[in-house]
Image (cartoon, rainbow, N blue to C red; front, top):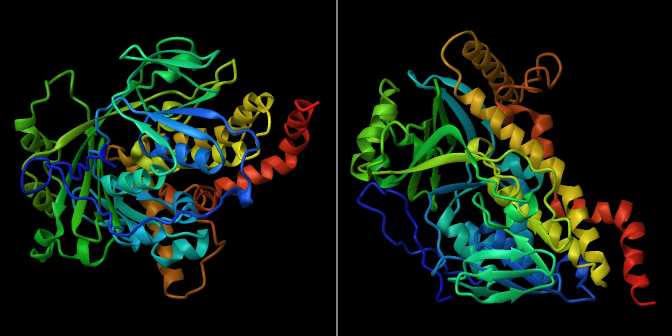
Length: 488
């Protein structure tokens, strides 16, 4: 626990970034068993590179599957600098399964709806009800949370079960052994390595076969957090707190997302805009002025919100094209989360995909009984996860286009689509029968959250269930026998 430093706020409205207390009042009681009580017959020494959300989740799941797990983290102390993050039902069902329900309740906010607004007028373009409907429709709630609170929970969940080593920067690797060389010169050996080291992953280079730098998307994002007591004191802003929603303002080449975090004590803002790094060097002392200059002419409530932010941090949005494979050819290294499928924030699924990856890995490796099964299980993990993660990447990239349309015919078509789906949602909320087919205005809608078919696919997904299903259909006959053969 001593390695954890909680850095809880990005550019708060009352001054520069400071370390903030992260909730840790409720002890975590993880389930006594996962994976239907299975634990691996053969226990591996596994190294997870990276102590972010995905790395912690992978380490926890593999430990619960019966393996000895070490996390290697390059930073001297472990903590998260960040702001808001979204916990969709497909992610939340895993957290609840792992015993985090009570801890979550202390700091999350359950948004009642998603609303999109026109950038210059604030006119409502889209409305999709969430609230209790998320749990009813998809089996788990939708939450908003501060990233630091989330990261601390995951750390507290994993730490009793794994060995977390800080100040351990990996500088080289031999995937055939596998072994990792640290900056200190130490060589760490393992039976299996999981690369969860993010967008600028070193482990990815060994899977790809050489340097593979992320590419700029052309967008960047300002991030800030405002105490909600300030919003509550303003009649124009009060409703953003009293009626918690995920609110998005859509404009030419820009959009803003706002929502409550930390049990409605803070309001999180993410402001996406064209990245001008190459044109204008970044100067933190000029951050607020430059942020406001990006959103001149936006509706009055946006101007009020921006005026409450004295400084901000900028997040350059980078991306990678989908990889051909996530598994090294020698079958002892696999990638997870942003190291293999980075997600742009436009679909709010980055952490969800990483934690789904971790859940599938843990489930599969709870069945391990022989070294001969390691590579096949890694390829099974990729087979289960690849298409879903790749399609989610594509969905995120699609929203980058949809959100940032210039004013004109395409934007007007988008807005008409969104309004049509909103009218359907409002009729349904009033208990009125739908007009025409129930999915006429939602299937393929520009508001992807209004598309009921997409939402079932995205939010109804159960990573453990998918792993169990894959094993019954393929693994039992193809991989299971490898464990028995090794004993002959």
